[in-house]
Amino acid sequence: MSPGPHTVYRYVPHTIRQIPEAGVSYAAYCSAPGCTEESGPQGAQENAQDWALRHTGRTGHALFRRVVTDHARVTRAEGR
Image 1: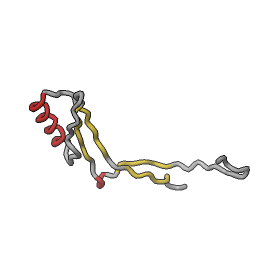
Image 2 (image 1 turned 180 degrees about the horizontal axis):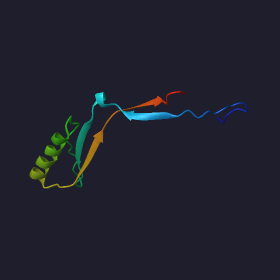
Image 3 (image 1 turned 180 degrees about the vertical axis):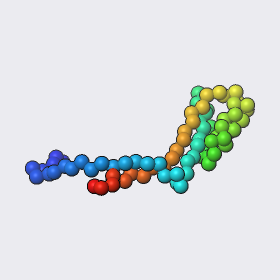
Image 4 (image 1 turned 90 degrees about the horizontal axis):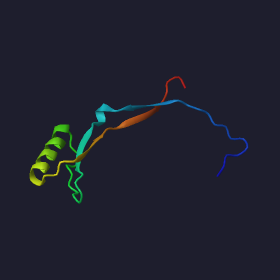
């Protein structure tokens, strides 16, 4: 549906910021062909890294994808 003849668009600036109190999670995923093992979400980076090291020791797989997830909030810029 296209805007009507009287539609007005207004730019309103917003910001996006991390919310530290919401926490951060860390995960490691094995990238070896055919392997689907993963650390699962961890509350500390060291836990995901330790899982990857143990997985390498058990399997010889040495390539991992690491994911860090945080939370952010979008708010309208002040004074608008």
